[in-house]
Length: 449
Image 1: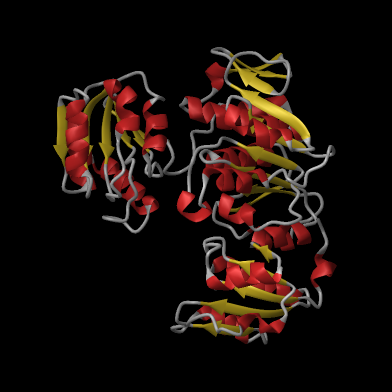
Image 2 (image 1 turned 90 degrees about the vertical axis):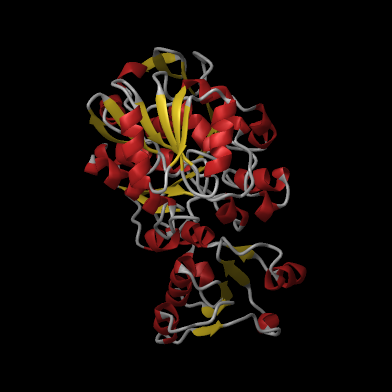
């Protein structure tokens, strides 16, 4: 942390001219590094390329020159989305050139401590909740990383009396060498991104990098209810803080049906919590433990837990209308996320789902379909989703031509006390450029009722 002088005079190749690549190149140049930026896409009037060239930075677009690595680079900073089978990356690995992502830079330049949050699910909710607690508690938090703000840009200007709350993905963590957060949080581990990492073990090893460089002076908050995480947890040298939903535990943070416990002692009542779902309770425990370790007082934590209703597009409360409650869970782009959403409700659910057809099964939803009274199916998977819902005994399974019609029909079918839930279990790209735009369309349709 605060090792920016070590980058002066280094030769660095920034691979990928996206938001993070632009920010990394800008930062490295300002620190006195010799920087070349290379992007495989055509330049086509890129404002980023123009801005970097105006500072004297070499920018090469439209492909990877065969001799690009002849400059004897000290390090490569790559866009997290660039896979490791990329020819330039493979050649760099053969030459022994370190390959970083920009969150490594953020650690090297930051004067503020870092709280890094990773996990297959729950990263954004945990990051956002913790940010709110720290903000209300006067801890001067900055939010950064995979949540939408480039980490190295935030870290460059961070002061020692601030704290960076950073959401980090497996893609980002895979490209770290020295990265060492003061507090590391690992929410959970499920198989994901195997097309990128290759195997479940490689994916888990990337996640485990969140704690790889921690020492006994740091804290590692992890999900104690997942035995598959144990081998990676045991390798951590940090002070371990487990969280568990399996009743009262003497160590870490835990919960039963009534209370949240800190180090085995009652801390807060669960009845004050506004955020629904067992999966969100895990996120709450992780965020609360982090806040306690940052010396936030109990009153502040209680105030935020009693008012926080989730992040936009993730189990977001939208409105109550004539006894029906509407939730926007557009970020649920796979069946695991939709399963978590359905498990949050005891009262009947009218489910709006469907989208891009990747050929995946809906079978993971079957144990929870008993609480679904109707399905409004959208997009490419509509017919498959209707067949699946019918096989689960759902009486009303209908196709909707648009989000507005789906919301109107869901409202017409529903009764007082029902929940109307958008949780697609599919990506949005067959109908919408992003899950955010899909969620916004849902909210707009609800507001029109």
